[in-house]
Amino acid sequence: MSDLQQRLQQAGVHTLLVQFTDVHGCAKGKLVPLAHLGEVLRSGAGFAGPSIWGTGLPRSGPRSEYYARGDASTAQPLPWMPGVARIVGNGFVDGQPFDACPRQVLQRALARLAARGWTLRTGIEPEFFLLKRSQAGVWLPADEHDRLDKPSYDLKSLPRQLGFLHALHQALAAAGMDVLQLDHEDAHGQYEVNFSFDEALRSCDHLMLFKLVAHHLAEERGMVFSMMPKPFADQPGSGLHFHVSLWAGERCVFDPETPGANLSPLGRQFVAGVLAHAGALCALAAPTVNSYKRLTVGESLSGTTWAPAYVAQGPNNRTALVRTLPGRFEWRLPDASANPYLATAALVAAGLDGIDRQLDPGPDCTDDLFDWPLARIREQGIALLPQSLEQALEALQADAVICAALGETLASEFIRLKRAEWTEYARHVSGWELARYAAAF
Image: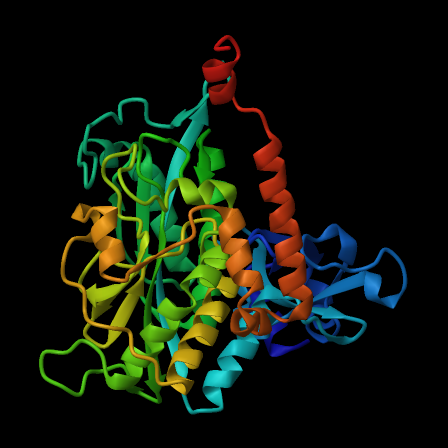
């Protein structure tokens, strides 16, 4: 018996949850008895490849089988599922690492950093909704009393979800995650959890673990945990902000060299790359039709918005795409539906391109960009983010740097699937259209 198997057995584990992540950022997997841990580590748990979104695998032959090969370092008992331990799997096909496995796409990107002696650390901040469905089938906040005009940090609504939030904290802490804070966000039924930063791959693994436990605990309480970017037109949407720093051993290479600056010259070059590839990054960081109800230029129906629409950077400026802070930056583009592995891999590719080409991010923007009219934005030469999934996909397809980071298989599958999503949406006749046009002419 291996040391890992013995340790898990002593912890009361009898079953493995072998988990991987599909192209949409959804956790998938199966249960495997602990006695078969050796097989999971050597060859992996087997799945029908074509049944997994984004693989593009055939229905027959050796390449039709997808194996999630367990990463032993991720084995972790799940306190909310007694007797079960999660182990994260990397995708293998026909005995080889699968090029379209999102986790391995990120590992390839991080290997490029490692070749230069660097590691990426990220702190990911998920925002989410707790919802319920009315008898009429309408989605509503789970807390029907959560109705303040400005509910940010509300201490009337927050205690009503204390049971869920405390259980979430306990479960994550028991799984080895350091939860820094939990709060009520800007929309009715919306909350945020902050974790401490970690090496980028572990941060993504942690986010997937967070989603697993949050879904489970919400369902136990008759609620739906939702990371839909913007479920309500008149309420702010959910972001997935990334705090990003680059390290050489224990030295942060983003630390400023000039008094009063936030970032080193290399850090500014990394940010410049993120700005230069903002359009393509948008397709991965805001990957749904609904995402673009959040990333609006001009007046928002929800009033309050913290979602960036303008490709700019500035010190502690939450209205810019990149908010710079001492020794790190906050990438404010991603929303809650983003696949964390793909978004991080694309971020690395953009940042390295900025460093390799020694790009300049331009002058720091200190103004509130949400107050600027669009004419002034254009006068200042500030680019706009794509305003639809279709525009973002066009930007991605035209961006050789980001597509190369994804790899040919995943880039083509991602674009194919998302174009189909856009087409289905564009051809759908909505209730708004019927109400406006059915009797108008």
